[in-house]
Each structure stands twice: as structure tokens, then as C-alpha cells.
Image (cartoon, rainbow, N blue to C red; front, side, top):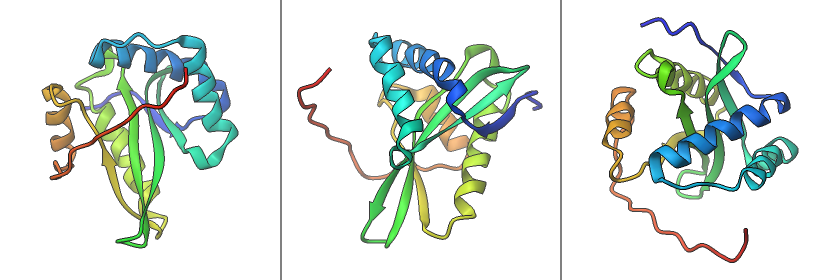
Length: 155
């Protein structure tokens, strides 16, 4: 299915659009209402510190309609780096048009050109069955791992 979307590495000019998509994603998927100014600073920090990761955007007619963040995890078991796909969101009018598949293919192509990348990972809300189905459709498989976290003091 043709999406009419161009995929590219994000640029600093995309900070506001990425922040807007992240606000929408958090509200839609987790019913979380994030602090916009903190989020904008967090998105901007990715551009200011390459070791934080990088964003990829889907663009249609000059508008950012989807995005994802790649962060890095060193694996001593594999002597390689996993790319974690995070903050993945596609605006509702652009869903079911192949945008996720295009984003994923872009990531896979970029990763395959770097021998140190040993795999791609992402996490998803347990109750988000629509997203889980979409990830299976693009060739990702569920792992046996569960994720735990402990938030520390901060904003």
C-alpha cells in the first residue's frame, strides 16, 4: 500500500513535531499526560548528544506524520549493539498505509550497514494488542523477557 511518505533521519528543525507526536503517543497508549517543556528538552537533548540516540521521521507534504527514536544497548553476550526502537508513533490518518513498515525497513537498512549492530528491539504495553500485531506483521517476534523499572527522583 502506497503511503506517500518519505522516511529520513530527523534534524533539529523536527524537535517540536517530534515532541507533539510523543505527547500524542503517551496520551493514547498509556493515558499519560507529559510535561511539554520537559519533553521538548528531552527531544532536543538527543540532537545535542549523539550518544543518546537519533530520531527517524516519516514526512508527508512537509509535515512529520510519524517518528521513532533509536537508542543503544551494548550486549557483552554478542559483542555488539542492539538498537532499541522507542517513541514510535504514527498519526492516526497515516496508519494502515505502510508507514510503520517503511520506518522499520529504513531502520533495518541503516542497521545492516553497520557491522556492530547485532539486532533491533522494542518494548510495547502489554495491553496494546494492535501494536503487537503490527510488530509481528513487520517480522519482529516476542521475547521471553519481561521489563522491570525503577524510577529515580527527577522531573
